[in-house]
Length: 357
Ligand SMILES: Nc1ncnc2c1ncn2[C@@H]1O[C@H](COP(=O)(O)OP(=O)(O)OP(=O)(O)O)[C@@H](O)[C@H]1O
Ligand SMILES: [Mg+2]
Picture 1 (tube, helix red, strand yellow):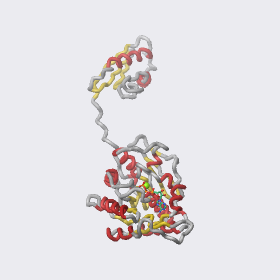
Picture 2: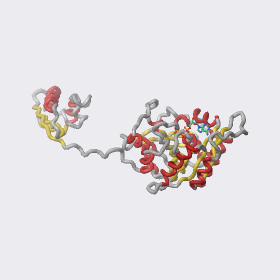
Picture 3: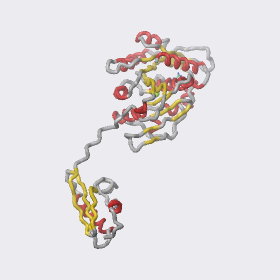
Picture 4: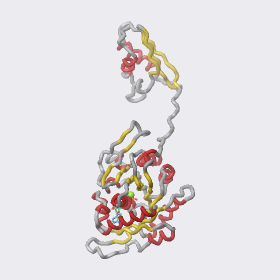
């Protein structure tokens, strides 16, 4: 037979044979071509089928034969036979995570709150910026898979994330660097505009990827903006990420404080047993931009401070409710970058946190 025909030619030809029940995939892609043997004037192909009878087996044998006849030099003898293929051992479910990327991270701090909307992300982003201003090496992982807000708050939405790896098992993300901080959010890695409607296992996989499959490099602090609440996703995260401790954010309001108990218990229960480095009271009072000397205690006074004392948690400080903080979040320019009084408040909290750790 013509000596220029070799096994890779044959595999190439066989890519024309599609499995009608498997979309557009061909027998080569599907790994069904078990063996190709060549002898002068003869081609022998062995197709592998799963144990379960495939109703299309005879069709596929015929299609492979026809394909080979079409391509092979005239007079070549074509043989196609089959073997039962044992299913490959199912790959372990989910990604096998390891902690390699956290090797050089000294402190991993979860920023949590029992209740949503208390300004956890605002505090996390500004704390990250403030810690960087104090000279620490800082990263922030936005683990809020349902409502990632870090891209907006840092003006990094739409930034294309560099990533390495062949598949989800060895994916490695490169965080976005801005304001002296390394940021990575579920929002950065999910396609822009794609609705975040992940459920249970998928959501916790996504957030573990953000933390464990990211090239953080050497850091003094890796802050983790946790999703609101104290649900399964938190338990899964706390189980797989070696947090060194947590910071709790609350407003002075009594209902928010009830949630603080739950947030604190999540870290203090004996199975988790992580230190709480401190409590931040956000929206401690309202100060109008036009009247910077006035303070209105909209949500009660010192609720957070009292709660910290009651729970024996270091009190890190109070952040006022001011228009500038909200605008900074919306514009992607955290106030902690500036020199306003509230910028100073974040710097002070960052200093205390670094001490507490
Ligand atoms: N101290 C503050 N002064 C003014 N606005 C604030 C302050 N803290 C938070 N905000 C605003 O309140 C809104 C909610 O804050 P943020 O997103 O940080 O809360 P969150 O606790 O992370 O919410 P979620 O539970 O949805 O993750 C944002 O628009 C933010 O800009
Ligand atoms: Mg948030």
